[in-house]
Length: 382
Image (cartoon, rainbow, N blue to C red; front, side):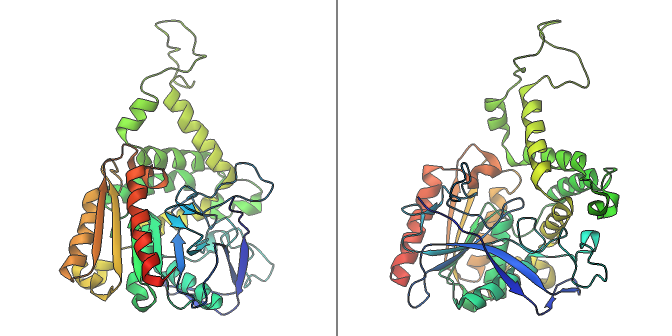
């Protein structure tokens, strides 16, 4: 059994952010798994997606059901084998799982108030920079690989562009070079649900001792719909009614307020659970970081020109039923890398699970990742 222990690293010096703002006296929460070898060549950085954290793998001692969010992928004997690799998971700046975020005290506040709405805007590029600073503290100069799914895949791509000399391989799963207008639209609707919640108080709800749970619930429900494929939703729920729906008028209550269908009950459950643990300002920050990411913007929209800086080898994986980060977006990255004659492997998996497939245990998907990391192990001699 792989046991996980959260760690914290403090950084006092100001960090310049892409927005032009800066932040100082912040902390990063992280976990490590496995053992760093003598020449520090077996380190793998795992970047997390929107509502995940540093707790990538393993469990916490004495805590039932505390598995890391990618525990099926990472651990002893798993595709990313921690008996060979030293795996690092870092909680992103602005998150709500230990790393400094909007709910923490602002060191520049004269009365010790939390940041709240004053927390600076952060980007994927900023996260990559903080991760690099953490690796500096750990004495790791070069990564055997950086990997991530969805927003984590964007960070992996960011590493290949911002620190090409520090990455041997990048594993980008169910991701994209930027968000489509439709994706930005989904994010905006979710944000509006939060900011229009009466308990939001302009982002300073901490001072009012309330949480904008209604907005968070709706935001999560919107997001969750986009993570699943139509086939999975139909197979799992279809038009099935809840067991306790009164058998009247053809088995319907005909109510605009009550929960009648199982899919409604499922979405409300997901929304309620999310509102109990996620921070509203963090949600706004992270979805904006998703929206802003676009390496080609500074290159006249040319993704090929943007990726010329990348020198590492790549593995890209997409899923046929993922309509939020469709395979066509991964193929854009593949083409741009091939335009630059980079070493690229690409797998398109016909899994039914939609965007969430990158988190699940699909034999074909895991087989691809396992084979790729076997090659990395041979390359670094572990």
